[in-house]
Each structure stands twice: as structure tokens, then as C-alpha cells.
Picture 1 (cartoon, rainbow, N blue to C red):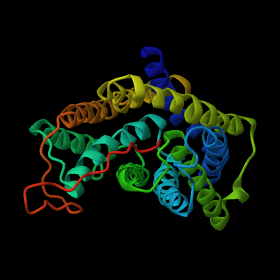
Picture 2: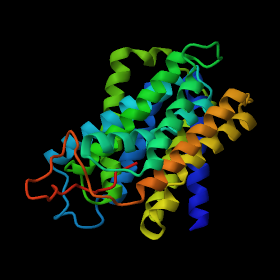
Picture 3: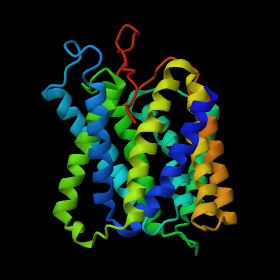
Picture 4: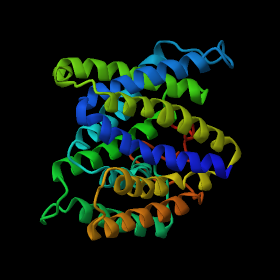
Length: 314
């Protein structure tokens, strides 16, 4: 279990480094299109023939849901991340992406009425202060503000897409669902790359191609397989620790492999984000009676509409 958890820590933490290397020579949307089309197709080819194909088919509704999810997660969220990492250091990008649990808990509360303990609201305050300090909108920090804001917006989009997947008519088998969303997102990325004409700027260097291959093999296959296995055998609270360990791994690897500087601003803001995520994840483990939400209304007799609980594919 701990070996698999270590794999998730290192695999997903190191993808920020690989992406930073890939976008040096390959345009961001094109590099991601290559990753998701290849990874999704192989994953889907492996997983779809296995399990209940008749009872868990891939039809028009599933493809439509896969396109929506692929657009939110891979085109918007991953796309803005890849675009921003052309100017934002990998370590800073990882810290900003680490805010995903903050956005998920906030959207879950506002949209679906999921009540949280007081410590979660402390986590919201600490997390947003950390993000503001890292982005530094009014100061003279060295971080590209536009890129940083794009990454934060992408993190919020990932959270929204993950919550959407709860009730979406996706395949029930996690690997099939993830493969379908990845293929759909990859196809949309191919279209977006072609429309923007960014392929004209592509430099097919060995370094960039190896970085994309690393994203496919280590990020999509090794990391995701370990993650799915952990969800079946380990406590969710333990698996969720990747959310605040991955940014630490990425900051360290960015310093070690890319020569990125770890500034006091990064250390303080990163610590605030990590503490915030820890508080929110711990508070989210407690089950409280649901309240009011924009997409959820209490029944007149005091009961609450059932809430889908399917895991979001990674």
C-alpha cells in the first residue's frame, strides 16, 4: 500500500516537470493532445473488453458525457496548465494546482449543500490567502500573474468537472470511464491545436518527445493504475494525501532537475495551501446532514434528494 502511495506521490508530482520540458519545444495543446489520445486509447482498449460490457456499454450518452468531462478536465484545466507552464515555474504551478481540493469542497458546499465543519472554513481562508500571496496580484513578485491566474482557473475547472462526473452517465468501470474521457479530451485538444495553428511552431526534439512519453507512461498509466488500486484497498483519507504531497514533490524536483529557485514567497504560500488542503480533507471526512445548495433542494418532508457518489476519473 505504501509503495503504491509513493508511486502516486512521485508519478503525479513529477508530471509538472515533464510538462515543463515538453512545452519548451512542443506547443501546449499539441503536447497534451498526444498524451491523452495515446494514453486514453490504450487504456480504453485494455479496459473496455473486460468486465460487464453488456450492462455497462459505451453509447451516445456516455460519449457525450465523456466529451463534456474531457473538455473541462483536459482541454480547459490541463490546457491552461500547459499554456501557463511556458512562463510559470513547475513548482509554482504545482502549488497552484494543489488548490483543487479547496475548489471542490467550496463548489460541493455551494452547489450541493454539503455541510462542512468549522475547520474547513478556516482552511478556505488560509488557502485563498496562500493563493493570493503566491499570485501576488498587486506586488512585484517574479511569478507571471496571468499564467498563475490561468492555472488557478484551470484548477477550479477541474474541480467543477470532477463534481459533474458524479451524476454524468459515464461508464461505471473506472478505467473505462477514465479512458473514454481521456480519448474525448484528446480529440478535442487535436481540434483546438489545429484551429489555433500552433502545430506550425512545433519542434520535434528528442527531449520533448521523451517528456510526452513520460507523461503517457508514468503519469497516465503507472500513476493512475496505482491510484485506482489504492482506492480499492486503502482508506480514502490516506489516498487523499496525494493532494498535498504532490506539490511538495514537484517543488523539490523543480529545484533539483530544472534549477528553479525556491523563494520565501513560494515557501510561505505553499505551506498555506498545503495546510488548507489538509484541513479541508480532514473536515470533509465527516458526514453531516446536507443543507441547501444551488443544485439541490430539500424535500418537504425533511428528506433530502439522493446525491450521486461516483468517483471522478483522473
